[in-house]
Image 1 (cartoon, rainbow, N blue to C red):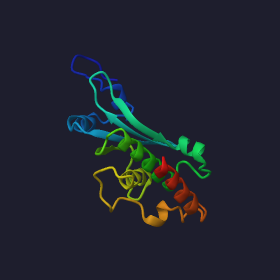
Image 2: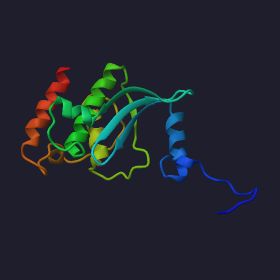
Image 3: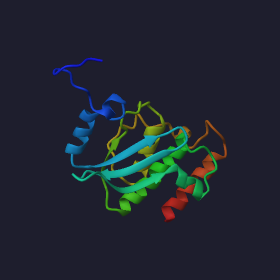
Image 4: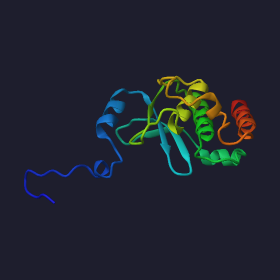
Length: 166
């Protein structure tokens, strides 16, 4: 490892490839709420976050773990689950008075028609204004889960009706 007065070690989160500080600075300077979408191997989380000098403030959130409690029996890391969690988070954000949010996918690799953009589509369908292109959203049959199982479509529509009723 290099040493000496001219050597500068990068921030720890940058070294771990966890934070892109240039992109984060641009998002924070916009002054808008961020729709933070994070994906793990088993779950998807959507949070609406506002910047504060003392630390970020989470104003509304939803995770696929909540879908399990509501009766979702399918995979929590699939495209239909991502759509539902985006829809649920969008409904909660509207109740909190958030009408516009900028998607923040962090250091994740965006794929057209993938899970991250299914969550964005769910937020937009909930009535939230989220800047995105329709080209990146998954096809309607993938959102309905026809590529996985025929029974997902019925479960998806019943879950969506439950969320709209709340």
